[in-house]
Image 1: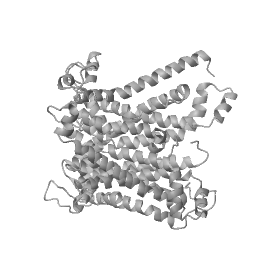
Image 2: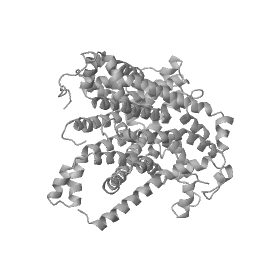
Image 3: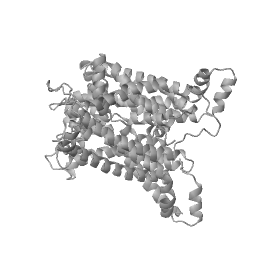
Image 4: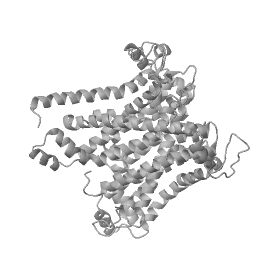
Length: 309
Length: 277
């Protein structure tokens, strides 16, 4: 599976040792400032380090933190489940809408660079600004969207979506959909544009109906790109922090406390660093699993000539 | 496969959907732009005001009177320095990945990806302690180093593809012409890859400019970029939304412009080189 065979053009160009040498500075930087801290975090997770309690100076406690996490922390698990719910619902909607839009553009509008680029603005600007924009739109007293939602009866007169317990979660999902649907559209459109023509022509010659062509030719050819989009979005959504933190801070109560916000609270509000490290380790674990799936499913298969992109 | 008239109907439908989507995507941003030019009364009006007498007072009020202008400078310094470092360190590594072969190369390549995918919150605490012990906390150096290490993997993943597209014969020809290996890379291959390098650099800039969590945790006062300054303006009582909007616009406008600049290479950047676009 790994692509370790020499290139078809013969032996690689660089002398033995020169390649690794070129990679050395980059590798060193990443090891010192990302991998080092990561292992320190793993070590901290096995201690009772806390800045809030002078009695907890970082004594080794083994797996106590993880034991507590597994058995005794309903808040962690509810934030974990909330995050999974957020990822599944938001990414599913983004995918369906984004795919449909990409297909419409691909099939009937052809290349429309200006409009597709305008679509990208929500996902290119700082997530903090996105959070701020929506906070302004959804203000209880003078929010523009609040006003129109009340007008058409979507919202009660004296309530505001960001503080209404039953509305706040759907709202952050909707805002994520607003921000990231264009991402799916952009990538799917690129995938559709790079499809080979021959299979489609062959299917048409055989008299296949449009829907059959879509289902039996286009979807299978697009499978690697679909996997890629779902995984990249899934990983990113699982790490969501900035805009939700800005809009709700995890509230009201803990109704929008995603796991990264929970980790932030344990570490930088309660200063319970040992336990906080255990929490962030769990987040890292989930992302690492998704990440290796991404690599296996997408990158390796895309390097085989059979996959089409 | 579809007859003419229904094809035309679909075409109009597709255009309508696209236009509506663009309007939905842009309206919130446009509303923020409008808000930055509104006075207090227009802003707090319970009926949304689409037309009003514009004022530019919010911009000097926050950038000069509240001294937010150094934050803009910090944003520029942080993004530019981390981008330059990323390219200078990352491009040779990418070239190495494209042009050499050794056992474990693909594993090292995957290792770079995992560093990118790690949730910032899991690295932020140790990095905070690390920079505190180095005495770099609350300086832009801390943020520059954090952003550089975090964005390096993107450079490596994206640039490898750009270098791989340049035929090896080019390197060989340059070396036949008497250039050293380094000379061939610097003066022949790198210029050929310039569009790719440029696009990668712009993406690095955008990512660093937009980044919030690392900067938020690593600097509290002097080195704050704009993204970190924004939450400070939102208070439970009496947020001055005109000023908040002014900061948000300054913090996003460069990115909007850059998006147009790199739109062609964006697909590749956003998928770590997996989709060519």
